[in-house]
Structures are given as structure tokens and as C-alpha cells.
Length: 295
Image (cartoon, rainbow, N blue to C red; front, side):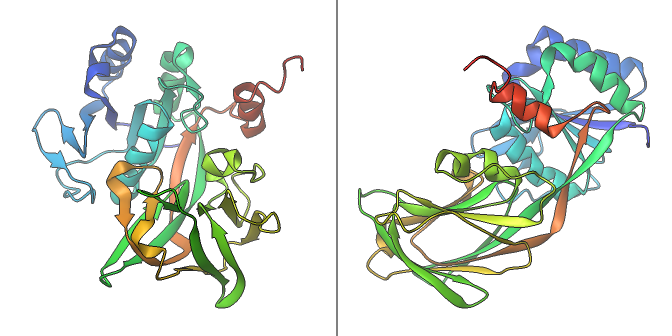
């Protein structure tokens, strides 16, 4: 595989003072790797060397940030934010776990130096992950667009009231649902909010999209797995629009209020995630969910 020569280190600013992270950064520099530090802040990211800000739309010029790889030191939430930048720059991404469970940031920080060294020398596998394109229409007919690695969640907010919505697959009305919302997720997102609401875990190389209701009023509304080519449309009842929000990848920077129509389909873009050669998705599940322990 291609050796890595230019790396964006993406993390919270306070982590740049962490001794282990500094050790990895200095090791990469000694091996001729060009490093750009990008820190995450509330509502934006910042290039440390130039103070250039990267806004919520991830708009910046590629000429200013040239990279072969983004390395994330943090948890899955930070990885999801950095993934938007990776898609914009069309570069792969690598996650080192400085968070909690960490399904996406799969490299343990104790093994980080060894595994990062191997990866920059070309010893890695590329994991192409499906993403979703979402088009969201609000009550004023303003159109917002976003891209998602994990999920698009249409949910209630501000009031403890159910949402009434119609769900269509390829323009066919499959149900009229009253619930706290619905989660539309990729296979990658099946271990996130969807899993908490009863969706099965889906292998990330599966060509499917998951629809999972949130606290449905009727037990007959169950999770549905559809083909990746299917087009999903959610129409929110006019009496529910005032307390409906759409959130993309769980981010406060990707909340869209008063959603009345949401259209979702598989994106043409795919996120490239790098893993060590010994990476095994089912081993990750076994470790993170503690399936190997005594019940």
C-alpha cells in the first residue's frame, strides 16, 4: 500500500498536550511525515498553524490543507466530525481511541505508536464505508443538505409529544407512524443509536439501510432493513412539524428544526477508513460488547 507522507492530526485542543499523543506526533515528524494540527472547538475546527477556521459546512480550500490521511485522537463523536472533513478532502481517516467504547476509533491508545508506524509505512487495509445523503425541507420550505456516516434521526424536541409521520420506500407508503421519531442508519450506524432502539447489528460491508422507530406507539412498527438502492422519504404531519427536528450523526452542528420532509438515499461518496492489517470487525464487536466474558 501507499506510504503516508502528510497527516492531519485531528483532536480536541487539550489533547495536543497529552504525552503519548506528543510522542506519536514527534515520531511521525522524525520519520519525515508532514503534520498539520487541527483542533475541534464548539461549532468549528481550527488549523493550529494558521488559525484558519473550518466552519459547520466544512468549507475550506483543499490547497490550504493538503493531506494523505486524517488521524483522529478521541471518541466516535469526534471521528464523525472529522469524517466530514475527510470526505471534503477525499482522504482516508484513522481513529485512535481516547473516548469510551469506540466502534469507529478502533485502535487502542496503548498500541497506537506501533500501529500508526506500520500504517504510515503502507501496512494497512482500506475499509470503504457507505454514507447517506439527506435532503431536509423545513416549514419555510428551506432546503438543507447533509451527509451522514452513522445516521439521520428525525425526532421530537422541545415538547414531550409524539410525532405523526408517513414513511415511504421508493414512493410506496409503508406505514403511518406515531412515535418519538425514526432513525435511518447505515450499517456503520447500526452499532449506535439504532442498536439502542432494537435494530440488529449489521456488518459494515452489507449493502443495506436500516429504519428503526423510536418508542413507537404501536408494537407493530418494527425496525426494517431495506436495500441500499431504495429511496426513503419521511413526511411529518403538519401538526407535528413544530416539535420535530432532524439530527445528522448526533451533532449539535447538524440539527435542522421544524422538519416537514426528509429524503434519504445512499450517497455516491464513501468514507475510506484505514485499519491495521490484523483488523477484524467481529473481534471489535467481541471486545467492545464484552461478548467473550462470562454471562
